Image (cartoon, rainbow, N blue to C red):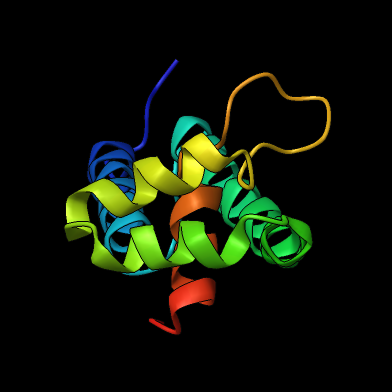
Amino acid sequence: MQIPEWTKPALVGAGAGAVALAIVGFGWGGWMTGSSAMEMSKKQSMAATVTALTPYCVRKSKDDPNSADLMAKIEEASSYKRRNMVEETGWATPLGAEKPDRALAEACLSALTGNT
């Protein structure tokens, strides 16, 4: 069997085109691997959950009879202790959860203090 003379250059060109397409697709085309997509999806779902639960946290703080005292203590505390204080109040603990959610505590603190 005779292989045509143009076969080798055609295969080299197809291979180079495939490599170029992959570089362009992953570099600038927005392609990503499955694990990268899963990571991005996980982060977005966590952010959406925090956004949805922030009003719940704020409402819990408003319903707390000690809210005024606790907010005064939070305002007086140093910035790195404030989130922990919100977690300790229980405001950032979603229903059914045993521990407070760190991201929810940060979002709740921002909503309560007016810092965006």
